[in-house]
Amino acid sequence: MTPFSFFRLDFSGEGIPPCLIDNFHAGDMRGGFTKYFEKDIYRANGIPFQLNETFISTSAKNVIRGLHFQLHEPQAKLVSVLYGRAYDVIVDLRPDSRTFKKWQAVELSGENHRALYVPRGFAHGFASLEDGTMMMYQCEGAYDKPSDTGVRFDDPDIGIDWPVSPDEAIHSERDMSLMSLSEYMRDSMRA
Image 1: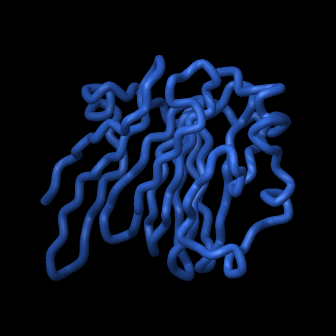
Image 2: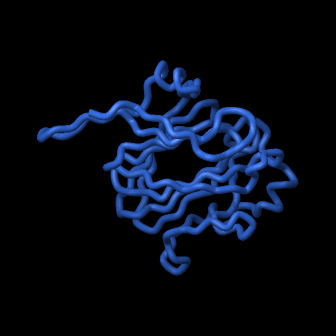
């Protein structure tokens, strides 16, 4: 049995920083049990998360999704992988932050039972490392469809080192038409 553990990621700025979370997990010969969220434990560790919605995506190997966010009233997110493996990426898009444009990646998997807390002001994306990778998103705040957008995953001003080669990567048309970081700077997120 492993209790929750919280590891703050190295980003500056105001507000709650991103956090890698080892979720509560117990397992034996029958299988396992994982708790992905408990309000009081999160609050005691500086994350006053209020769940609004939960959804799941399933991705083939080599799919890259992102980098997504909402311009107006962005959602904070807890992301986890229920099955498979993902190279999960966050980017600080707060223009006044000392870590603006900094990105960090962690591996989330159905085996490591980890979650990543993505605060408001950050973009999120991932590369699926296995077929059938199932990602769970728990979101705080109402979804604002009109301002749902993102920055391209391959923007050179961010420079993410993806583990999938460009000729093997699979993308949606929407993600291929997302804005550049310089376009984002003309109308940045407002939390």
